[in-house]
Length: 500
Ligand code: NAD
Image 1 (cartoon, rainbow, N blue to C red):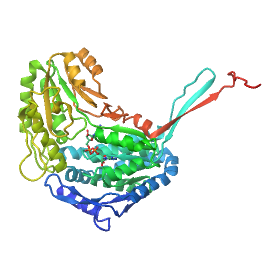
Image 2: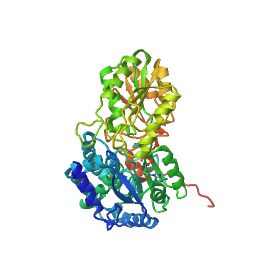
Image 3: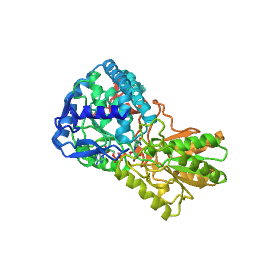
Image 4: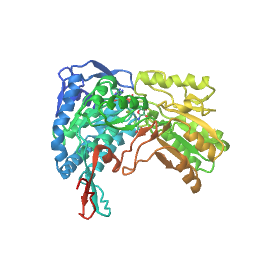
C-alpha cells in the first residue's frame, strides 16, 4: 500500500513542470511560482516531496475561475448536478484504496480507519447529490392577506479551508454540499497534508464537473488562506480548524462581510456514571481518544468518572492504553499511528511537563516513541483536576485526562467548565439522568451510551469556542444558500393612502 501511495503522489507531482505539487485552477493543474514547502511522511520523518504556497495572483486566478463558473453552475438543473456528484462518489469508490493509501502516507492515520474514510467521502457526495434537486425548496408561510413563500439559491463562490487530521473525508463533507447547492468552490487544504485533496479535485473533473466549478490552491494559512478569505469575490467561508484560526478568519473576512461557518476545536467530555455498562464505556472511551491518533475534533479527551468507580475504571483504560498497537500506519494491525508533523509532536510532548508540574500523574505513556517518525505513546493522566491545563486545553494527540466527579451536578459542572462545546459522551443506565445531563451539557452534540457514530441527516457542530453553525442534512444548504421570502398579496389588505 505504501508503494501505491508513493506512485500516486509521484503521478500528482509529475503533472507540474518542476515536480512540486501546486494548484488546480479552472479545470487543469497550474504550475505554481510561490515558495516551496516540505510535506512529511509522519511515519518515517522523511520529506515525501514539496508543494508550493500560492502567490496572490494564483489565488486571484482561482477565485476568478470560480466567479466565472458560478452563473452557469448555479443555473445548471439540479438533476444534472445530482448525476455529476453521484459520479464523483462512484469514482471515489473506484479509487478508494489509492485515496486511503495516500491518506495514510500523508497524514499518518492508520489504514484500519482510512480504508473507510474514502468510502465515507463517497457517502458524503451521494448524500448531498441526492438532495440537490430539493436544495432550493422553501416554505409556504401564509398570513391573513398574503401568501409568503421562501426559496433558496446558491450564495456564490465559496472558500473551503480544511485541516490535516482526516483531510479527504473532511474535504468531501464541506465541498459536496457546496457543489450540490450550486456554489462554486476554491479549496485550500492543510499544508501538512495536501495530497488527498488533489486527488479529490482530479476525480471531480473526471466525473464531468465543468471547469472552474471546483478549484484547489495549496499553501500556508497566513498567506494563501488569508488572501482567499479576504477576497471580495468569495461570498462565504467554510472553515474547519483551530479556534484561534477561526478568530483570525473572522477578522480577515470582516471587511467584505463574509458569511462564515466554523467547525473548531474541542475538549470533549466522556461522562461515566457508576451505573453504566462499564465494559462498553471502556471500549468507547478508549476508541474515542486513541483512534485517529487522538487527532480528532470529537475525541473524548476528558474522561469524567464517578468517584466510586474512578480507580477501577482508569486502571482498565491505562491497561488498554499500554496495550495499543502503535506503529506503521500501513500495517493493518496498527491502532495508533504517528502524529502529523514534528511541530505537533513537540506540542503534544510539551503537555507531559505541564501535566506533572501541575500535579497530574502519568498512568500510561507519557513520551515520544523512540526511533524514526513522529510517534507518541498513548497517554493517560490520572489524579487530574478541572483547573489543570491538561483538563482545559485541546492537546489533539493520543492523550486522555481523567478527572473524578461526585454526583450529577458535579458531572454537569465539570463537563461544561471548558471554553469548548463540541461534543459530549454520556454513560449511564438511568434514562431520566441521560435526558437531564444531555440537556444540561453545553455542547452541540451528545452521544448517550455510544461513541461518535455519524448519521448524515443530523446536525454536526459546536457551541462556545467549538464553532458557529451546523453541517449535515439541510443545515449545510442553509449555509451555502441565500433564503428569499416572496409575499404575494391577495389584494384584500388596506394600504394607507398617504398624500391622497
Ligand atoms: P489550523 O487552524 O491550524 O489550520 C486549518 C486550516 O486553516 C489549514 O488549511 C491552515 O492552512 C488554514 N489557516 C491557518 N491560518 C489561516 C489564516 N490566517 N487564514 C486562513 N486560513 C488559515 O488547524 P489544524 O491544526 O490544521 O487542525 C486541527 C484543528 O482542527 C483542531 O483544533 C481540531 O479540533 C480542529 N478540527 C475541528 C473539526 C470540527 O468539525 N469541529 C474537525 C476536524 C478538526
